[in-house]
Length: 198
Image (cartoon, rainbow, N blue to C red; front, side):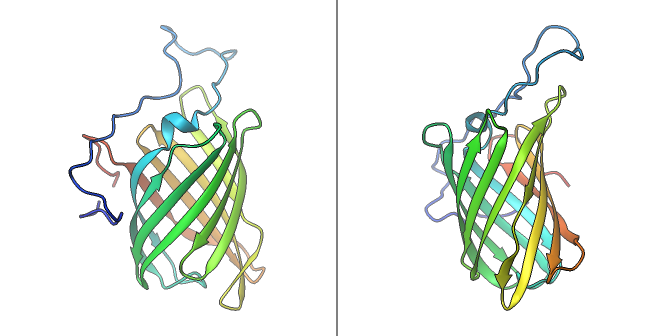
């Protein structure tokens, strides 16, 4: 997907992360309709280093083109509070985004506040659901926020398709207009033997 990591201080001397496992237990039989879907385990999935690429159209958020970067999810506090940092490069140059994340497992809700060095902040909130095949999906939405004199709103669907990959499908509304495609991105966990989907 990408060459050298954009994370400051990252080097090949860091120990590789262990390949994570899926979150659906092996019951030794096919799944059945009445089987319970386990609550999503954030601590088993997100913490670590992920690389991503995202081709976006031109918008108030920036020029259109390819964005590539690295996101580091830190282990959380109290099983609810987490942070992440994005270091990325896009058509307008390098940028960072720092996030504070709250995951309430029992309520199946996520919220995420991002401070983006391109000059805007955004708040996303949503719910997570899963199925017996081991797929979890987070549906996020932002309230409208101002960017460069225009009002922007985002809707995002994060599909946790495997223990080492997730896909973000995004739609954008500008100045109250209809939601249109804002690109699909892949995040791939930096673990041995894993390559990005194409």
